[in-house]
Length: 99
Image 1 (tube, rainbow, N blue to C red):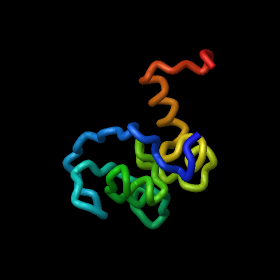
Image 2: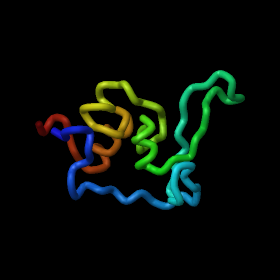
Image 3: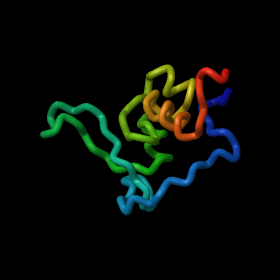
Image 4: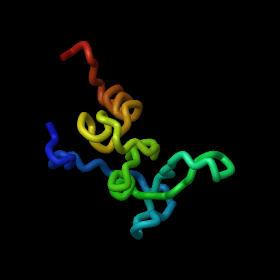
């Protein structure tokens, strides 16, 4: 189990450059991080953040949805929502029946 919500050593996943600048640093790999906001035209506040800053702000590093406070996001697979974690496992060939 990962302690203190830190990524496991050697598991640094390189994120592709999206060409979108992160609002908190100079990286060009920002994802569209969203949080519900009824004052916005589409109902969401959009903030471009790199994976590191997205996680620090409570957003999924895969899809950008705000997920802080959810048990699975905070403890079971830190930094990813259930949907993205399931997709990562499927892409890696993991099968729940193998455990």
